Image 1 (tube, rainbow, N blue to C red):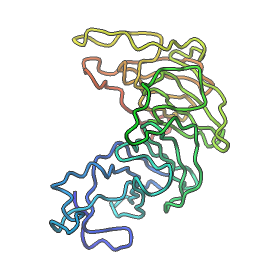
Image 2 (cartoon, rainbow, N blue to C red; image 1 turned 30 degrees about the horizontal axis):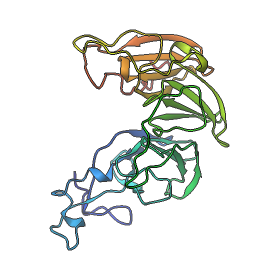
Image 3 (cartoon, rainbow, N blue to C red; image 1 turned 90 degrees about the vertical axis):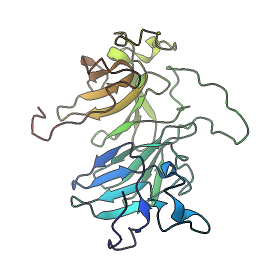
Length: 286
């Protein structure tokens, strides 16, 4: 996709090319926010970005893009060197826009966390809780599950949601561990957490999900099976968690009480079918 060269600047460049989009969000004005992973621009696509340029097209679009309903670009900013703590190339994974139009992003790699920016890209706050960052040429030790510690996120943060009324951040910590954790939205302090079917953190095991025959569905087990790939709220105050590792969605109260579960196309193999979900806009979200 190449941006229309007649779009006005400064937010548009006719050489931009949008790359892999892991997630999109809508804000309270029904504007569309998208992540574009800039490092996915292939060498034969990025000829305008070489020195000297090898062609007229293209260069990677900024990693954060805001569109109106007609597809016009309203804001565009961000890249792996944009600000200290920005997710490295390929790691940016989630975006949430709050009621004040602040933009929250996260990265799903070692040393990544959540950062908060203004609508036009001014840095505001870093959630912290970062695990060790990779050092070039120096290997990091293998990641080990630890569902009982709540200080750091060694593999980064893949998905999260904001409860703005309660001023809380819900993190689906499921790329390595298998739990939901809740933190204060302003201070970053830990508040509570739970595992699959609402079990307390102390009862979550730190073992890999048991092997199973991939010709059939994943095992139906009480514990979460990584990866947990989304956490969203419904209007009735329930918390929906996408458990991609088990093709399952589990539903909880915001305090962690288990309500129900349902499976999604268990015939899908490898990646899992419960990658994300969204609710309809009717009042009862039917």
